Image 1: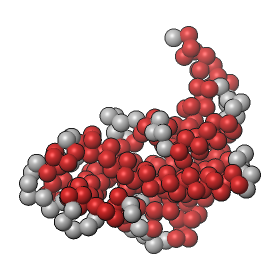
Image 2 (image 1 turned 135 degrees about the vertical axis):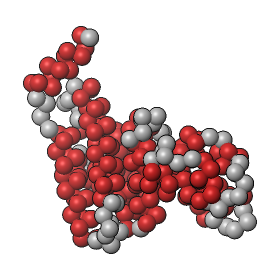
Image 3 (image 1 turned 135 degrees about the horizontal axis):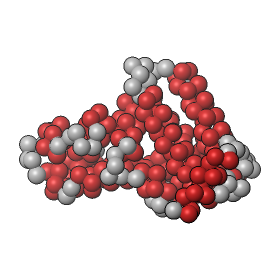
Image 4 (image 1 turned 90 degrees about the vertical axis):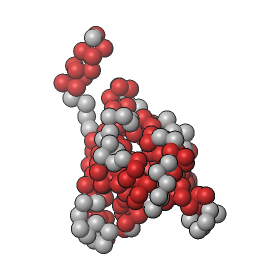
Length: 228
């Protein structure tokens, strides 16, 4: 039984925790991490006790970490399955296959309001100066993220390390920001054909960006940074 199933049972202590996380995720996604007070989250979760959130999480950063942890755990389990299938088919050098294995467990959520809510929330975390989501993702220790990242690193082996690392950050930022923009559409959860086209084109763009030739200007700029 999943954590969500357990927490969702009425009367359980976890039910209050889950309601707080769901309310926070929705409000953060709509208004940003600093545009929402703990009091508003308590109220949106139906908690008359204003100390409920502090009791369960202690602080706003720990609440945000809890939401990310719960969501990423489920998404990453799906990612591991996709990477296992990719490896079984001998596609570990196929960048498009790697990108699908890496990001489709997230894009598959976009046909539900619940999934849209998480994408909007994650994009707010990405754009918040108090969080470094790409670094959090890479250092998370989740198996799927670690394995997918290793496959991408192997394909970028001919690039200077500094450029490869920055392009990996661009990959995460581009994917999550683009998906968040998609969720603003009124038909975001219903236009399956349009979404499939959008995602396929997004993967093409990310693959092109990762594999783009390094210009003399970029190499010169990189060299200059090493002297400063």
